[in-house]
Image 1 (tube, rainbow, N blue to C red):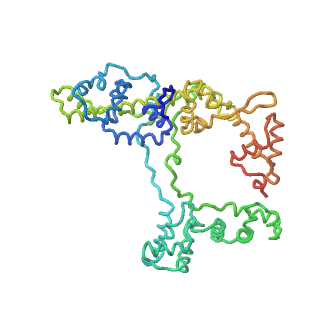
Image 2: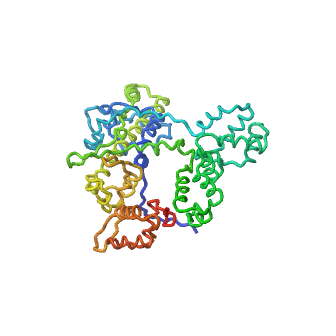
Image 3: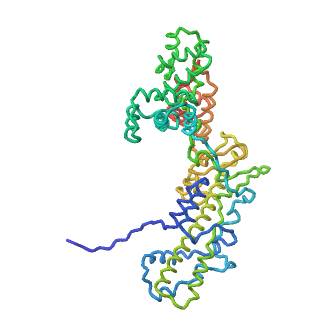
Length: 496
């Protein structure tokens, strides 16, 4: 049986402007310029211009804009609706400062920072480097095409990731070149003589052997190293040195030379040429913190404060429509399109301003909380700090602080740090004092760094040493911190 009933529900929905702001907040400086270019291409009402004519001169009529956007799909506007388009909502006079006030630090006091475009990096990729060497071989067109297929099948680390049978099939179906495994193997052997040594190998073991065989002159240590990698590779990677030394019959000094010759090899010969993501290869700081005679000064990277404005052409089109007497259906459609683009441009400029304000507000709170570190650079001076602490100081949501912390960098006189670096949980000492887990990790790293590498400390021993220093910590926590520091277990830290 069908029934009608009324219910009250409280729902929270994000407006398009809020969603746009959240997306802009998590974009680092390295990608902000690209995001602005995309918006400039999509919205002709938005231009790069002087701040004097920027969109803060105009007031976003949030209520009217939302309604107008909902009506955008309905082009069949009545004459009354068309007449109600208020040009003053879009084209306020420059003296009418109704824009939002973000303070004097909107541009982060970064006028001294160069606004010029970043230099373009010219690179030679790993595959280009190998292909250049291929031209030195006297090969006919057919063999050259096969060799190119082999080189193209290598990954960025320099390893060959395609089986020979697969390469033969690729050549037959893709280039109509019929070959066999013997010919492919012959060309692989020639490519393995290229630089850097160790390339075009299938496994790490083969890669190391190729490098050892290229050592000139072949010393006793290098010959023994070849035997270790060839016959005792599994024992070597597990650091069962006693077993290897016993089988080879070498004394400690000779065996140490063998190990030293192996650890100098490059396990990823092509990695030096790898082109990594732009944002990862260049760390562009979002903030700059300067110590001016004990007073910390914060500035925002100038690339974080782009100069945007509303297109004069679009503003003039709105004025022309307002002056015109005849307003037919086509003009109504045109003004609706212009109105949407102007709204979108204002929203975007306002979101950029809110982004800068939120970044500065969050970073300023972090500086206040971690003042001692920014003055001294001592990691042990970092206080326990979580996202909630900064959220309470700034009156921002925890998720907003998280978006800022996860993708932004700050440059200090002690180095460049990711904002997430300053956040850490608290650990209680025996005296009841709360210290940052960052401090515990630093001390743990120092203990491991100064240990006897012939007899490295186990996790149990490390736990005891930390507890002796007054840190109330469990063994599994020590193991977790050690892994976070990318430090292997005691057996793999052992050295001769």
